[in-house]
Image 1 (tube, rainbow, N blue to C red):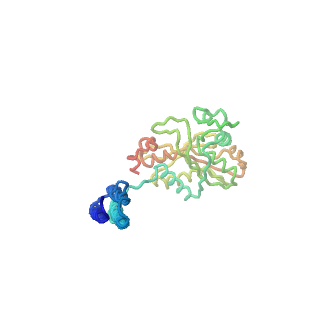
Image 2: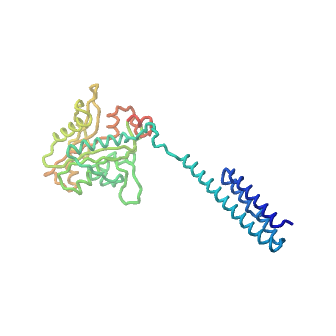
Image 3: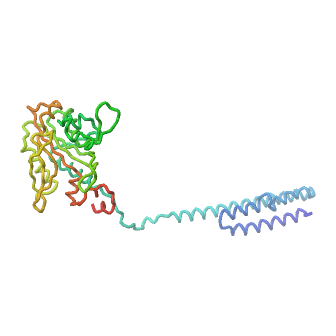
Length: 338
């Protein structure tokens, strides 16, 4: 059986060997293996403790002190190695995550507003500059606001399911997705005393099949003026000023007689093309007296005019597009051109 001197010598050799091997450890996993080897249940230090019972009392004390000193040295060496490896791991992580703030990035492609949004913003700017205010309303409407208050009789084709998208909400009256923004005009006249100068942009819905010139969900802007002494000449002048501001001074306008149940007289509004032909832009006319009465306005005292265009169609004309469906296809290659 070993004596205290032999045991101490073995422990000193163990501590020296551990110092070399710990210095060579390259990662925390290999350090964990060395920790188990030098201080674990099957380590030489644990085996030495088991030998204490067979030593003489004098040797037992000296051997115990040697074992404690060896354990303390090994624990300190392992802790130092662990700190060294952890610091190295942190440094490597920092280096991997380092940002070079002096690095020059490539060109960042910025997004832009959709063509419809650009056209709507431009329209609003033009009409606000002409003294109008912006009005909005709900996209789901009742028959009163979408039809009846606008002097549209029950037999009118627009009130059929082949032209209007009805919504079943369990209500006793007809409910539908609005087919124009004219209900905003009715709501404004019901809640605001004349004079009234508004434009109402927004989405509208019809049962149209999508093709090169039509969409089932499209954007529209309508205008309404109610004041004393308003004439058809005021309407014509307003359209001329709008076209000049939106398209440029070289574009001409004309009014053609037409029919709409909510205006009397009514007209189609055309603009000139570069080739000398004419393009229909929208409808307009003097507000029908019945519409004014439905909103509690005396047509003997107040007169008005209204107009409306498709914003999508204006965008198509402004940017000379061949197909209105390009506006909703979400082709990034197309949209990046604008």
